[in-house]
Length: 505
Image (cartoon, rainbow, N blue to C red):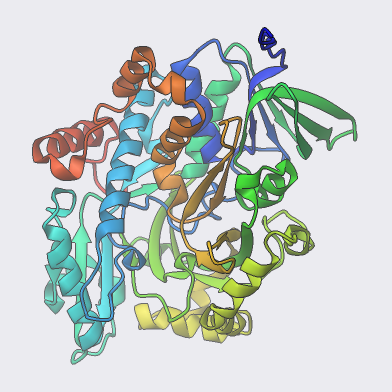
């Protein structure tokens, strides 16, 4: 009996991207550079790109490169400090910088100062135990070329030069220490994302649809996906067929992954965490702080709640934030529904979610305490970092919504994850990105990993391999293991991205 010929799949689009955030923008540009003939449709439920997690006010940690984020270098029970995750994140951020450099050289991005600035990254701690931890962390990281330029100091006069606002009014007898990476950056992912989508929208066979909501996803017999879309402006519904679908809807990705019904998505749950900032309103105070200064998180706190006094450049102006303060909301998106959490609970994930919840009592207590905080309580947390802070100089700003991944364990239980997770079907026809930190900063590496899963044959071709190396010269090599390549790469990207210029204009 002869085999039946496989029919050619006739679709409306080669690729459908759900969500207009940094992940979809990155994947869309990568795919269009690799194959200009691809047809791509992008759908976003809001009326502008990057309005959720990628927005500058919503993003909990711009320019994550593991230089200062202490949650990426946990201390083990025996006192040792594990730096593996920090090294991996630092390398991924270098990959992102190479891709942005390529986009600048090609003219996709116009001015690096519109989305990235040089801002030193510091870690700051107090108390003997924390000082000891920071020194061990520093010594461990210095062994890697990616952190070779890191400075360490317990000298109060030197620290006063680095972080005057934090040193003003501080107890002279208190043991303190800080590390500094001058190479740090501030990245406005909202601005970057919108610029990338502006470019994509001008390309042949690319269409960008705002105020459109994805209502359902159905796998067809021919392997394509039927995507049901609703135009929120008039209520009109339509069905689109695509060969590949990417769910990059931030906190909304879990609900859409569940609608796809792929077996690889079974058992995943989500734990929503909201956030708030204290935003400085005094220009004189803002002008005295030129750094991102991260401290140690409270016991049980999620990674997005690692406290930091943070210089950012938003819409061309210098801003100063402190926080974020965590909270609990049943929404999965800042502009989501209070029924999101309930809607995400299925038979396949209820056990992992209960299991993870029982193991996260410290987190639950922490979130309850955060929700109950008064303005005075929040201000007291700020004063631990900035002793001379004045209450009248600060106001509350609502930050973004994060959904931490709850992952099913082989035993049937669940574990709360604090990273990002790419979930893809075995045939590579659909993929979703779940989770948060470090997220945006490592978007390029995450999307390359996704393409290795979902565009496996194309990724192995000489044409795609050559093009990726053009976009990311270090592709296939480890910067952490090659001193010369690391130095050469950083010199090139720093020059292109204008990271050698003064921290604040």
